[in-house]
Image (cartoon, rainbow over all chains, first blue to last red; front, top):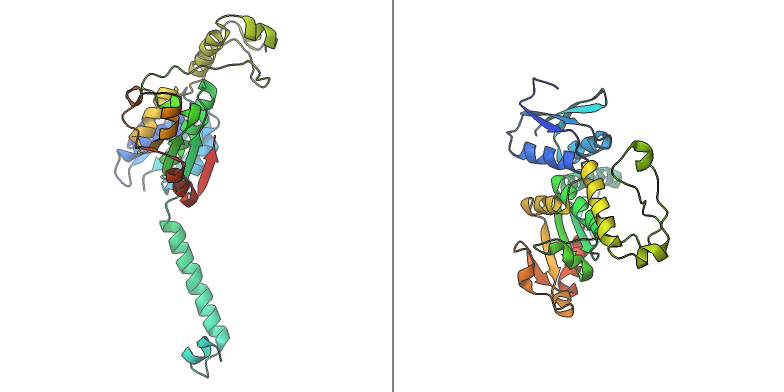
Amino acid sequence: MNTHATQTLDARGMNCPLPILRTKKALSAMSSGETLAITSTDPGSFKDMQAFCKQTGNELLSSNQEQGEFVYVVRKS
Amino acid sequence: MGKLDIILPENLDKSIFDQWFDERFETRMAERAAAHVPSLAIIATKGTLDWAYPPFILASTASALGWDVSVFFTFYGLELLKKDLHLEISPLGNPSMPMKMPFGPQWFKDINWKIPNLVMAGMPGFEKMATGLMQQTVKNNGVASIEELRSICIESDVKLVACQMTVELFGHSHDAFIPEITDWIGAASFLPVAQKSDVCLFI
């Protein structure tokens, strides 16, 4: 887990579309420029997170796979 | 002489004007595309547990993407707007539905039980049992419940509109439905919404 992020979101064990919906919810409570680190176990979230960020204009700073878990860092636009 | 020849000075090279116009047009179109909020219109017509998922998953996700979403619930789809959801699933006549047990050792879970239609139709409580197994499978896989997805839709301002005609047809009472229903309308009111949407789905 990236400890430098402003906030973290544990979406492990959740399946499509919950990781995206939870990410959206967490981001809406944050200020522009803040970062959110999301941990997910849903393999589908890898492409979905890219699409979500592209569509909403939030920046996907990193997207990593570590031991079956996906870690994303998103900066709120 | 065309209108353009009157407006433009005689010595102007038209190709320069065309180039200017093309560039300007591109910029304007890009600005317009950037400012456009995509919209989704869904017509939800089915009221079983399995068919309840697509409209709510697509609606909640579209709204997370910042889209403007309306869902029109009609016929059996109205069941999805009841205060108390008692959605069931019927594997009868659905050869694509895997019948797998959500518990026990892996080899047992992997068995796809082929149950003859005659047994499914004749065994009392078969649909109740299938519904229970489906709910357990959903839970085991971290898939949201319909109640949860519906709440997310309401929180994120998805417009849930209900078909007035169906209420009368099936003798429903308005009191049985969630108060968050945006409107009770008919086909003539929803079609213009569907017409203006970027994506329209019939589910």
